[in-house]
Length: 308
Image 1 (cartoon, rainbow, N blue to C red):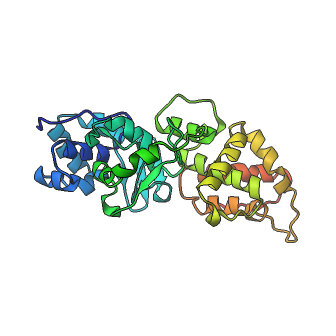
Image 2: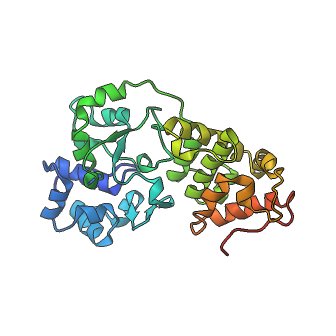
Image 3: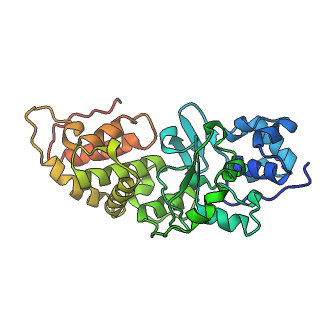
C-alpha cells in the first residue's frame, strides 16, 4: 500500500483521484503511475473493475467508498452514480474545470494534487460552476489524456488567476436542479423527477427551445448562451408540472395540417424528432407518450410514432 495518499473528495471522479495520487507521488502522468503498479489508467478511467480493484488495494480504500466517483464508459453510454447518459451529453474527451474552485483547492503554494475534478464538470448540461457562477473552462490538449486532471491543470496553471477573476453570474434554476440530482440531493417534488436525469434535462432544453424559437429551432446554431437561456425557459415551465407544459404546447396542437394523418412530429417538429431519435433510451418513451396524450385532446386520431 502507498504511504503517500490523500482522501478522495465528495463528487470527485475516480480518474481525478488517481491522477492526484500520481501527482502527490511525484509522477507527472497518471498512465505512467498506473504502469508502475500493475493497472491501466485508461481502463480505470472507463470503469474497469479489475483495474479499480488494483488501485483500491494500492491506496487502501474499499471499492464501495470509491464508487461515487466511478465513471463507467462503454461505446455509446456513460454510467455515473446519478444514472446513465449518452456520451453526447458528457465531455469525456476534454478536461473541464472551474478556475475559482481549482485556485481554492491548490492554495497559494499551488499544490496541484489538492485540486480535484468534479463529476458535474463532465456533464454538458452544466455550463457554470455551481459554487462560483464562473463559466467552466476547457483545457485544450491531447484528448486521450483528458481524464488525467492534475496533468491537464499543469497546462492551464499560468492562466488560472485570469480565469478565476471572471465576473460571476447567478447559477440558473435548471442547473441547480441538475446538480442537485447529480449529487443525490433530496427530491424537490418536481414533475421532472419522474424521468431519468438525462431525458428530464434534455426534454427541458428542447421545451425551452421551441417555446423561444418555435416549432423548428436551429439547435445546431446554438452557442453556450443559447443553451443556458432555453434551459432556464424550459425549466421555468416544466418545474411547474405537466399542466404548465400542456399550456405552453397547446398553441402547437392548434395546428391543422393538410394531411389527415396527424403525428407528433407534424405538431411539435424538432422537439418530437429529438425525442424520437432517442426512443430506445430510458425516459424518452414515457415523455413521448405524455406528449402524444396531451396532443390527443385536440387530435383524437393522432398516430403514434413510437416503435413499440
